[in-house]
Image (cartoon, rainbow, N blue to C red; front, side, top):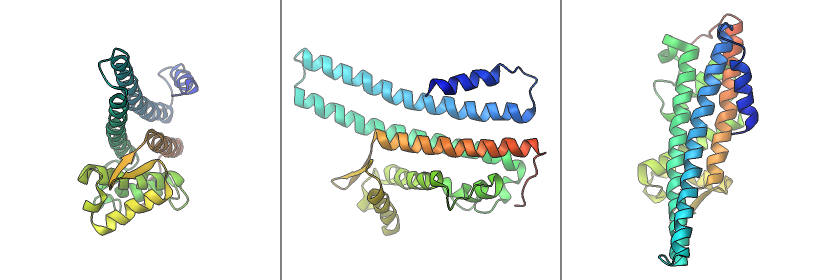
Length: 227
């Protein structure tokens, strides 16, 4: 994460404990998302660097053929990208849940679509009605929906898309037509580091917009919309 983000966190903390509630809420939500995303992404990149160094040393010492070394690094990268993406998506869902409960509190179960839908779709009305974000023009929401499609394919059938029902397979194929960082090899879905960064950036931007809305509502006395 950028150094300017840390500087921003330090500036907020320097204001002391007697800040308005909406200011403390702002700090909590931004820092929670910031630190969790950074841990996930750093774990991925540090693990890859460690494994690449191990393979390099094995090849240099003559204990592993160069071709096998390259194949090992690629397979490790494939598996790490899948695991990191699934972990990041799970974190995004958790943060959306936290934001939804901060906004609607005990009324959350009454929000339309929340109880009846699954994955990120259950937050559609929460984000639109509770945070005033127009999802028709929200590019970050489109990224999260695509991410949910990819996540479901990886989680429920290991990315082998011909095992999916036709309607879900069509959704995956639509993502493949519009993204070059989600790949199909021999009928199996693969995600790349570029895709992970793309999803992480989109969620960070959406999360910041939701925090801005939550803080503004707190300043105005928290007028909750009808559910």
